[in-house]
Image (cartoon, rainbow, N blue to C red; front, top):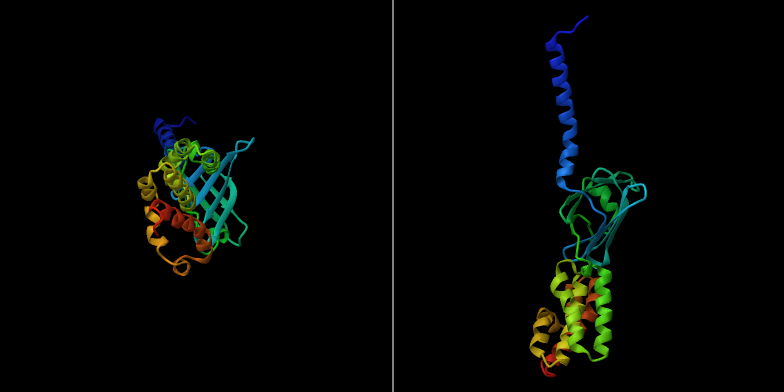
Length: 248
């Protein structure tokens, strides 16, 4: 039996609507950006996200985040269609990865199951930025090692020229501890160069804490954070005294 023309028009219309509705989520995902392999770091450096592409083309990820009092998050899995599902706990942890340019926003769709992977004072949700190669943690560590080698040779100007770009260009994704050590490194080098004005400006952020007793610091910081911060603060106290001409 020959079908009327209007029948086929209706079939085509329904088919088109089906394709539009079912293709929309994929189109929206594409508009959001592509998840690229690499290392991504949060502002303040408290979390890092590593994404790798396997030989099978699948994207795997690891997240490490450090919270207060040395509490941590540690997660790993496979990303499929912009999300990952982890099932080690009784309920599934669903994590979303939303890329935008060189940034990936990480969020948990199931908060409680996802925080099975975290200590009480830690979380992993937030924006992760792709830093310049010179701002990666291993590059920062190498810069400090190279700085020390030059400093020990008394090549103070060269040492400053090598390390100062890290402080100026990488502060956004640098941990507060790395930043504190680098400020102390540079302050001492500037002191050796007879530039105590720059030394003091680098250490200005430590002045308030440097004037407190160790007991006061321990009252204000969680125990593990105080232990980690103390050697940095103690170095700042010494360097402040040097750059003030030996005055406390």
